Amino acid sequence: MFGRKKTTVPEWAFPMDEGRYSAFISAVDDYFKRRGGTYNIDEGTVYIGSRKFGLINLVQMCAKRSPEEYPEMAEHHFTLMFESETFEAGLALDDFEKIKQYIGVRLYGKEYIAGFGKDIMICRPFAEGVFAALIFDLPQTVRNISRFNADKWNRSDDELFDIGIENIRRSYRLETQEVELGGDTVFTIETEHFFASNILFDIEQNKRFLGKGGALIAIPTRSLAAIYPINDMRTMSVLTTFFDFVPKFYANGPGSLTDQVFWYHDGRYEPLDYETGKKIKFTPSEAFMSLLNGGLE
Image (cartoon, rainbow, N blue to C red; front, side, top):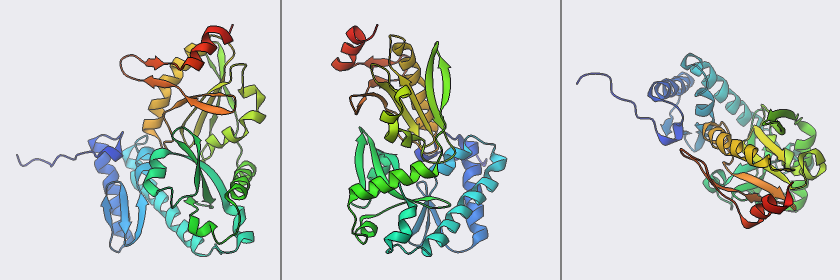
């Protein structure tokens, strides 16, 4: 009865167990104690006055490593965040010619957008449950561009999105790997940065990604994209594999984006209706059924 108090793992700390979560919170707590000042940790966020720092991405990264590494990982993570704040403080946000080199575009899931609000972020629908948003791509981190920022530049949203997409295209290499799956090839893009899914802005220019029936698309995290050109009935076997791995990568993160699997065709992304469990349940649309029944040999 006088044993150690049980640590309850909150939902935001998935997929950690009690021991890892306890070690994680201790590492974060120790970092801010050493830094000094008043802080509060609540519901996946560290609050320092009016400033706040999210913990979800850090917890997802730590979940894949040994608890002995958590103090060093927390130190590195928050040091970068505070360095980024210092860098941002020196930016001339009102001077478009000086700031435009940092403008970027990144894809986000609907949960992230809902957390900030569409009235604060500058975003537009990309696919069901996925939005393209304007961001500052800074040396140490990524920050959202607010409407307050953009209104000072006297530029249209279309122009800003064009600049942001081109800046990311120029700044980051998106190397494609070919993964053999069931006798067929799936193209994957895995990165250390946040912009693997930006490959989709150029999908029409990458003709090898598109089969005669379009392509299967998955972007479960900021650092992983998978593309399969649809050409024949082997698509069903590959699709089953997508339904298996996409929810797992989405749940484990870091940088969870969407657990949707999309069928890209005719310039649009159609989400494929599936449910996971002991067995995968797939409910194809009439258009996808028509493709399977008559459009593939």
